[in-house]
Length: 185
Image (cartoon, rainbow, N blue to C red; front, side, top):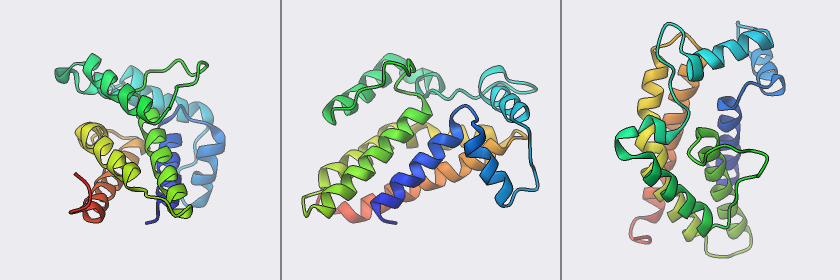
């Protein structure tokens, strides 16, 4: 898959894990889902899965809350170093933490797009590949597989989407490993 397509895929996955918006979910439900839900139902499913629980404990959308044993402060610090290196700043209006799944996926989309832009300009894209590989290993792959496993036990659309995300991240990391073997440290 080329970097531009990867960037788009990361953004689609980010939108699916953000608070449900009709413009994201309605086209998906129209395309092929036997399930069509109201906006209230989508929001209730989101809240039950990630914030309130329901019959099961909610699954946090924050890496630092998911990986509490590693300490959230160190995770946040590492993510902020990645962001600073690539001159990424969180929007003031956002007021969310950098370890939110949506923010991490948007950062991966940015790295993929910058890789594509470098390639198109005939420049070396290895720094973006290396950053993508490192961010996947140190962050997304450190928690998304277990995140997906926990969601798979529930009765929401998020279980399947999380499985897709985990597989997508693993495939991207494998592809980066093959592309950079012998080239990147």
